[in-house]
Length: 275
Length: 262
Image 1: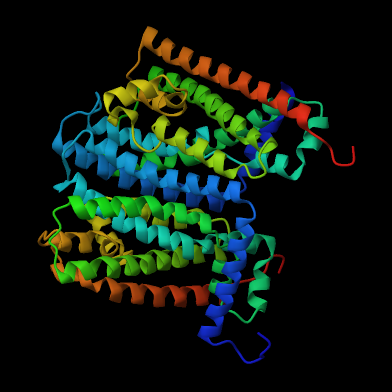
Image 2 (image 1 turned 90 degrees about the horizontal axis):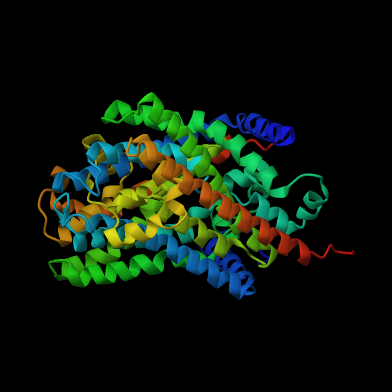
């Protein structure tokens, strides 16, 4: 990497790939703890579905959605959340780095800070979070009354990619708060982990103002609810046209641009410890 | 005894300085409370009661539960395990106090702070929006006793989990599994009365309901007289059992320690 010109986005990605590769090789040296951790992560995700199973042990439908239909929500939301957890949740460590004074190091290197954070704290064991929702998603696609067509088939990968970006943007934006109040990382959890829980259920069940927030402020509705409603041919969810499901990519790009702007603004606001 | 009281007092004072973190935590607990409350209310659209809980019981359970998470320390803490991993535990062992009692005092110091500043706000905010049940004064007193015991059970469990760091290079995997098992079966994620009856019966024979489910049921006024004493007895028994188990494991672990250069 001996050239001195400012990095282009492709060379930044190459740096990211090499750093992540190094992290994976490092983790792989401790295979036993890697697997135990992977199992631990898979178990966490399993407990989420166990909660839903406990609910459906008592009722046949929730807000008019059957267990299999809720499983579709869970699968779509869970896979996106797991991907974001793997790729971008590392921004959560910003608070730790700010307190330790090590955040300065990221600013000194000619690679975007988000990319560095994401690479330096990368942990492949978080894959454990994705395995279980993937299984649930596969089962749900067979069991829920999905209206199959070319369009609904395309909607699945589109939704997962868009959902990953939306969760990633939520992670970045809410974690930026630590640049102002360094101990407030937990606020982000309300939107990230809390957001994940909210996407597991049909948004109809949430109170009216929480539903509005989840559609227009924190765009969680586009992660699972609106696409699932379209796949299941449910009409008029939240009073939006059913085509709103296809707005997810637009929402995702907008959210990511916003996240980029907020993060940039937060970085400019950064003051090292002791200054 | 005086020493441990001072440890608890100092822990309280230390944690009281992290006001931002407290505020952030209250916000998060409240948001989770609202999401879970709405989900449970959707269940009650379909039926009147679940396992003897009506809708008000379930929503009250959610908000009391969100307030209790940090008090009983259901998320655990890795302070002890980290000291074992780094070897700092050797310094701790040289000091003239009981390891387990010291860390228990730290937990009680934290809990006292969390009870006031993380326990009350989510409930009050929840009560603005939802109809929540408040206990009669004697029930409230019983609730306080039950939470006190719940913390002992939860502490003893997480203490034991952390001791695995003496044997494992990386304690985090097994530790995490132990914490999540406790969360699920304690009722921290969903009241255990929502479980199918065979699972609920099995769960009630485990130490985990003593950590959250039982104290909240006491809040809801589901136990009186002999039944209430039975709840206390169950919690005391689990606390004693897990504390003794923790001491046993610790004594085994101490025999294994090799101080570098020693």
